[in-house]
Image (cartoon, rainbow, N blue to C red; front, side):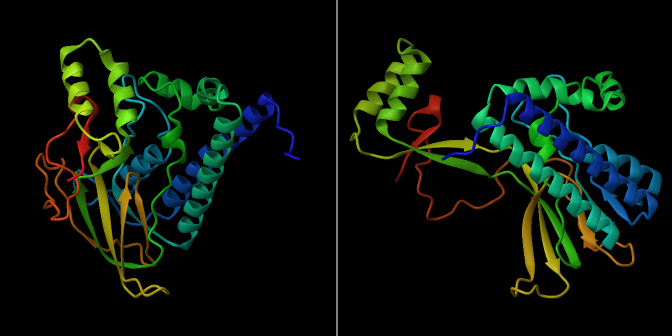
Length: 295
């Protein structure tokens, strides 16, 4: 037998408690750094960064769980930088990430069992911390951004010799479509529009069993390449990860590893060479859907 489902009010209460734990864990990270500040580098700001500015920036970054007015619901704000962390601070970061993971897991269960609770949660959660909420309302920040709540704080799992940061603007997601699925998507646009009719005729001219690819370009993001001082237990000497929050690096002496300073904005043109084994045609087959044929 399946376990009985918890009432909606109970799920919402659990989510509120998980949100409280998440906010408190972020506050604890900021407080631990302020108590024993290590070196900090903030993307786009002059160096060196003083401890007061570092504390202010770090707290704002870790507690940024809000929508801005007019913000695309799919987009998240980035707070890029490096923080030298001792063992006590790394422990706080681990606790914060555990709280984020618990919040994300509970949110996933609610979406599966009671999806109608999500809008209510977004409306209720800000009032869990009224002082913070009132302060942020004056800045146009009044609703909780769930993805910004649960996204993990990046951490280097071992001491790092150097960090190389670079914009990555060639990312994309590819979803396979059948001809029938593409036809249904076109019909939902406007079957009477001339440009849609042209694409429907084009689609009718290919085999019904041919797979198609729908491509979604991803927003530019910052990628950090970590070079470890010593090989990890599994033999790895480096790691690449995407960063949208401050990257905490282990540092016994409070100093940062060698790092570069990437340009303030991502390049406008593609920087990675096109792969010779590129499987998609250069031009979209169905432009309205960003659908391509395979070569």
